[in-house]
Image (cartoon, rainbow, N blue to C red):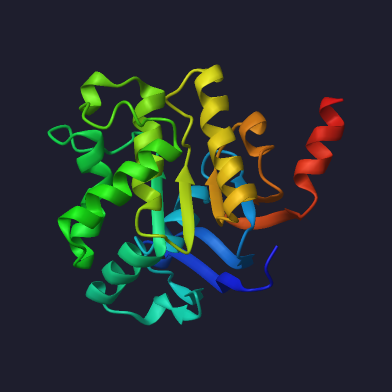
Amino acid sequence: MSSKTVLGLEDVWKIYGEKEAVQVEALKDVDLNVHQGDFTSITGPSGSGKSTLMHIIGCLLRPTRGTVKIDGVDISTLTESELASIRGQKVGFVFQQFNLMSKFTALENVALPLTFHDVGRKERIEKARKLLERVGLGDRVDHYPTELSGGQRQRVAIARALVVDPSVILADEPTGNLDTETGQEIMEIFEELNEDEERTLLLVTHEPHIARFADINVHLVDGEIVTYDKSFKDEMERVKK
């Protein structure tokens, strides 16, 4: 993979609560570098800090202290409007709940983020259509979310995450609402995006059979990184055999 650092965290802490007696240290002294083309899973028990870490990386939360850089830009010092701009340009989100607009078709949902980037309607529609074809939904572009299965809705969400060509795609429990077979299909799409297009992926999951798709695993316990395994996928494949 590329040596370019897409995401860098140094001495990142997130502490909830103002009074010392009721403070909760959700993240403690987290150091993490993600390079272009990395496929990284973040695992850990409930309450380990997985979601907090994801929200900080996604510019949805500020760290209490420490440095967070996306493509070299320190997001921990930005204003709210600057954070929103970075979030819209550099990060693609895929959520467990899909988060699609029910009154928009699949095509309109995918094209929507481009309206905030001064992209003309014709170009928006053309790009959205190509991405829906990329995830196997070329024949469902005019369907509304209620007319799609859970797996199809997640494919739409993946296409939407890709439409702005983000530096990193953050997937938060993306198979959590799907059956095992459909979840496998969704993960295979992520795997293809990583291997064929060198997309940088960061996946939060509590399911070992989902985490095994990643090449690198970051395991959190009580807000701290206790394991950083760069040969994770190979080891999981050996365990399977």
